[in-house]
Length: 97
Image (cartoon, rainbow, N blue to C red; front, side, top):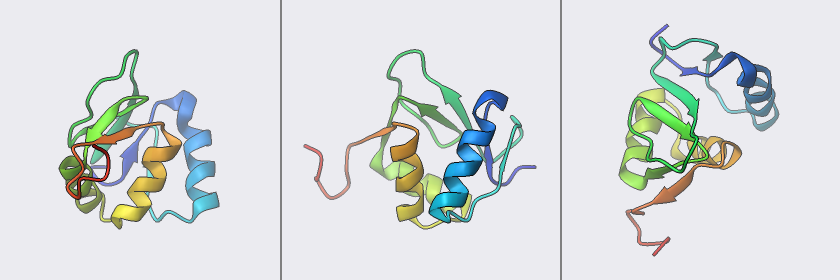
């Protein structure tokens, strides 16, 4: 695949429904061979450019790079981050200090 979002099978329908409702233009599949893979975080851990940890956090510059990697606007990624309960830290604008 190497494009789009890979999610665990148990989250697939829920994520697909969210993306459809919000009109986010993003391919989603139950795969680990994707541009970005979603995992459930047992504890709040940092996401990186390859792994998005649901329930964790992500640095703003990493989130911007991830949106570029997924070929979606940052606002669409923001919707997905909210849905997956991923907090944004180290905001480039200083909004979350």
